[in-house]
Structures are given as structure tokens and as C-alpha cells.
Length: 308
Image 1: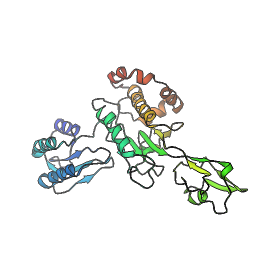
Image 2: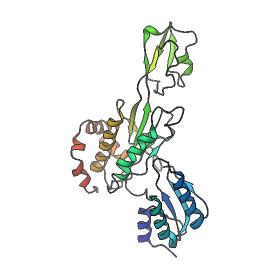
Image 3: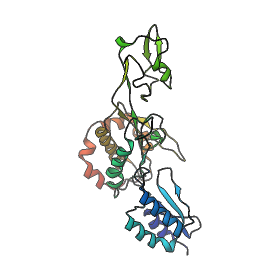
Image 4: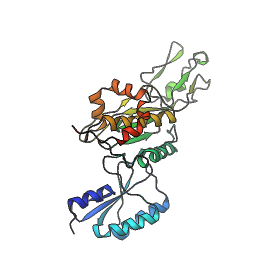
């Protein structure tokens, strides 16, 4: 049977995305930053085997989709997923499913990305579920400057960093400096018997941590760098890094302020990158510097999205 336009819209808002043939849907299962339990994976596989074509696909935002589902099977799938505690959705002008890299257990990871992304999922994907934005809001969390999940191409991106702390007095200017040999971007160089670190090159990846046998270079505590206004797709824009590095608690506050600013200043259909470009990055930074947006949170969330 064909699915009319109104039913397509309703299904899509629930995570049942109509296919081009007009007779089937792909079911989008929400994960918490790409993580499903083995029980949930088994349930997804069961639906794919029973109602689909025994196939499961994965999206760029780490959700799971089951294609080739017939319309008449949707109600049965909804009931089954409700029983298993599986949530579908992830569409519309909302906070989209968050993406977090495997920094929690990756050898390059500087931060527990899985725990932090799960926290953001609860606060903003679930907590802001009923908030309509001018456009979708994409958030990504990376555990190091390798940027595997492309945080700087999201509306809001978080990257963990660990900057080197150099003690000039302990440096012996070794002929084969372990810090220089370890750095992947060529930031440190031994010059005239002392190590020099070019901070314009250093990306705070933490690779040099504890490499110096004389402890001339030690790592700082992990901190978070935040990018805003990134996007990719029909238009591409790399996010702009906010000044400084932040703790987890500071990052949560800034992320919420960014979303409130988008809700307040954006026009219907406008991506946050365009809002930043229209207002100017210095003006945006100024608006994010204080707590006015957080203090007016309830007022801002109650605002209808502006139209031009």
C-alpha cells in the first residue's frame, strides 16, 4: 500500500523513514553515542530478520537502521521495541543523536568520551526532545585532535586536548630528544641545546606525555576545546574554535548556551553556521560569555521559531 504525504511525515518524526518505493520504511534505532547492548543488538537483528531483508545498516551519526520494512508491520515493530526498551527517532529540527568517538578505550584517547557523550545525550537529546529549533542541531565529541568523528564539522564540536608543560631547567637538550621524535606535527625542536615548542603547531594531542626521561615535559590535565558553527553536506563550513580550554562542567554550560542562542537568533530553516556568519563570530562569543542566555532559558525555549 502507498503511504500518503501526511503519514510519511508522521512516520518520519517517529524514526520510520519512508523509502523511495512508497511502500516501505527504514526504521532508525537511536543509540547512546553508537552503543547498544548485546540484548538490544539481538532485538534489532530479530526485527531485520522477521520483517526486513535480514540487513542492518549504520548511519554517520551512529544510529542503526533496519531497511525494507513494510508499512503494515510498523505497529508490530513499535510494540516489540517498546517491550525491549528500544527507542526510534532522530529526525526533524531537533537535537540529533550525538556522536562520540571511542576515546574511552582508544590508545590515543585523552578523555572518557563515551561517558561524557552519554551525559550530553541525556541532557540534550532526551532533555530537549520537545524543543523545536530553526534547524537540526548536531553535536560530536572527540577524544583527541585526530578528530575521527569530525567534531569541527558539527554545529557544536568538543575535542579533548592535553597540552605539554615544559620545564626549561630540566631540559638537557638531548641529541635524540624523545619529545621531538614523538611529536606527529613537528612542534618541538632542540635549538641551541634547549627544547623549543612551537605553540602555533602544537595541537595538544598528548602523544609526548611522559616521553622525556628527565621530566622536562609533562602533560597538563585533559581539557576540552569547543568548536561552533560547523556543517557539511550541500554547504561546507569548518567550525570556529572558542577561546580557551574548558572543564566538563564548563563545556556543558557552553553547549547549552549555544543551543539557546540558536533558538533565540535563528530563523526557520537556517543552520547555526549561517547564524554565526550573519551575527559575526565576535558578537556570538560575546553573547556566550555571560549567563544571560541560561538565566532566560525558560523564556527562550518558549519562543516560537522566528520566520523571515
